[in-house]
Image 1 (cartoon, rainbow, N blue to C red):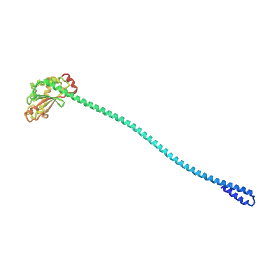
Image 2: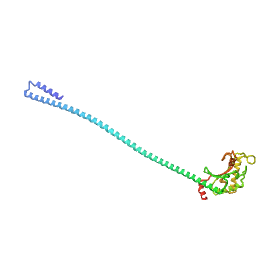
Image 3: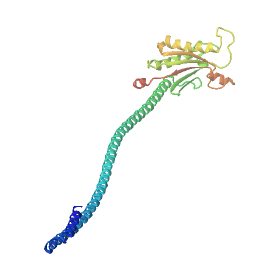
Image 4: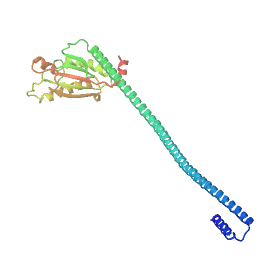
Length: 295
């Protein structure tokens, strides 16, 4: 605006002074006007250059802002990645820690399981050993009994091992008269030999069982086969106690009557086999070595 004002003033002065100024003055003023015009042109050029520079600077500034935002976004992405990696690392470390704990727990569980298996295996071996020793004990008892009793008719007395127990089965005709519970003289010698073997093993307990056939008892003091089977069992127990000194606490007397037969009662032979007195010996395992020492 100042430049235009100066030009306007110069032109006005030129017009007003045309008639009253000299040529020299006119030339001087014209030269000034030209200088002013040149200055104006130069200023206009500078202005345009400044505007262009400004535009260029603004463009660069925009580019810098864009680059800044891009870098900030990149930086944020990198920070997010770092946080993600840190989180994953912490998770991985925790998982490794948990895995270590689980592995330790599993190892302890496996160790306990192996210990239990080992203990059970040892228990099974002990049981097998105990069964073997018990069977051995029973065999020793059988051999001692057979050796003590000698050669008797197998139909009158039977000694065997069955279901981990030793059974001495003495026939009715050897022990008692028909329908009676009084022990015969012949049976006394057999009971003496049995008592000798049993007395040598004071820790062994046994049961004396009376068995009958299915023929009912008729008349007399004995009421029925229950009564007869019990009376025969107690007769044997009393003889072992009173005649041969076996402790009563080691013995049990029981009547089984006709309900545990070894064969059927349809024939005289079958009935004869069922009429018997049985001594059942159930040795304890801790008696095994004592029995071997006396063998």
